[in-house]
Amino acid sequence: MANTLKFGNGKWYGKEGTILAYNDENYNYKPLPFNFERGSSATVVNKDGLIETVGSDMPRIDYKDDSKGALLLEPQRTNLIEYSEDASQWLNVNEIITKDEIISPDGTLSADKFEFTGDGSIRPNTSQLTFIDNYVFSVFIKKGNSRYVTLQSRFFTTSSTIGFDLDNATAESGGVIEDYGNDWFRLSLTNNVTGDADRTGVFYVYLPNELGSMTSVSGNYAYVWGAQVEEGSYATSYIKSNSGSTTTRSAETANGSGDADTFNDSEGVLMAEISALDKSSDYRFIAVSDGTNNNRVSIYFGNDNTLTGFVSGVSQFNSGVNILDFNKVLLKYKSGDYSFWVNGFVAETSSSTSGTHANLNEIKFSMGSNSNSFYGKTKQLQYHNSALTDSELEQLTSWTSFTDMAEGQLYTIE
Image (cartoon, rainbow, N blue to C red):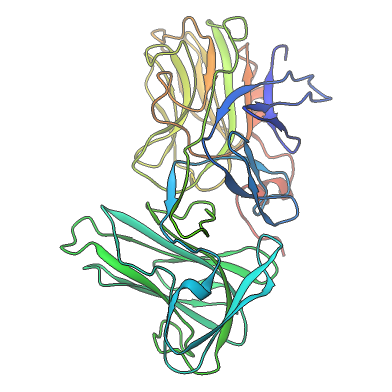
């Protein structure tokens, strides 16, 4: 397995502007540096399960629900809430706010207590917000004495009211609840207002005694931190916005790894262990190419939310797996001998001799032309400069243990 390049799989090293691989004691993997860019700070869940902020141009290794960590790449998003961590700046009705009452998900004493003195609500955005198509409202909540929380978007033509049950960690249809440890949950609702006559509205939080109710009950209290409203179809990582203005996290890119001596134009294998952040109509690519879209070997999430392989001049290879799970996938290329493997099995093969994969000189988290950036999580990325045997390909894409498989596929072991 000479000239095999890899990063991930539990050991990560990073420095400003670069994602570095590590030398594997079994296969002697070489470093695989990328030119990494993000023009702002960003947050990530660290090994201790806490949300931490990393500086601009620093790659993020996310340990949310994953002891090994995965490279996180996200698009640009803006938190439209101006005081994301200070509930005393929010609009409230029949409510007492106690600032900095308990430890927040970032490990600091910055989470506020809110307690109702009658039927009322708390509203993190002090002015109405307008959207083009999708919006997401999310907030971190820790239970006090109130089992139920309701999130609501109001005044849009398409408004939404979602109930959450903190005892059972469940949400009504249209809502998402994520466990962040230490009894903290991130609650979110998403809506599409493309066809709405009125795309302007506000967002509320209630503490009722019934699931989905908008009647807060006097004496009910909970803890709140990290409110976020963003344009998009899914909630991205938390964007701290606590200075009286909106805050933007820049998009991330990782390109420029390898050269002509790294890659074999005649044959090779591109392997990745990846998951998507959400189902989307966008293409999201990882590609070995000559810097154009005409000569490339690529693995990507399609606009139809399939996990797909593609070699220029050869038909696409598709699989029916859930792209929100971590999947081990590879594409072998060699004239007359192409194969697409997913989680230890061959998904498709081709005996085409028309593939174009000449002058390969770079691997990047995008198409060859730098369009359609890959946004998702990556545990492994490997390139092999030979086609490898079927037994080697099966080994590369198989789970090493039941625990490994369960973690990758988000199964619960009881």
